[in-house]
Length: 219
Image 1 (cartoon, rainbow, N blue to C red):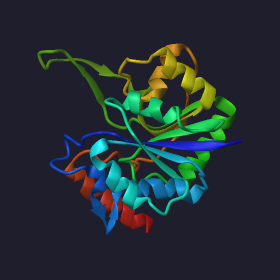
Image 2: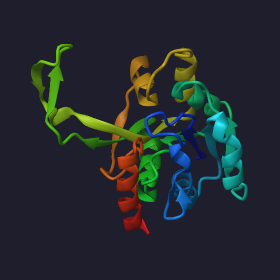
Image 3: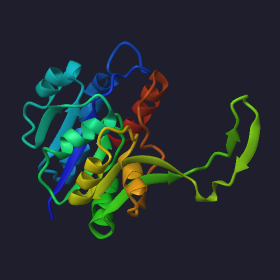
């Protein structure tokens, strides 16, 4: 079976600050490089980075010696970026991962690959541990939600290629925030892969400090 990876890197990092978070360095290495290296370590021979045009040339320099990496211009939304990646990859199964999740481990990637081969659509997730409140538009708590069946979504999400490509074609032009949600909307089943609470997405400066601690543990 052929597996490819699509790494989303098309965002503007508006909540992070004046710089693109993917280019921030932790222990001398860019966040995006930690992310890509995790997939390289598993043996992926095709990794497509869907990049913001503003950093495309920089990424080409960073990954100049990576034979498995292709860098393309992403779209104006995450959904559009992933679709552009799907048009490029050649595989049976595809793993889609946030470039800003550098703490992803080879173990989780391998587990995701194993699960998608039998289930066709999976998403890495962690069980919700916080108490969740439902609040109205006035800021009034109206319900305490039962968390026993609640999970937090992470990435990678993985799919049989023909399934996810057809779903993207079906919902082209819309703005889904994750690919599993698109597959769910189509009526197909999506299953969970147990994730890791350290597999956070770097969004703010405080996330960067936490990532530094977690990545130090991996080294």
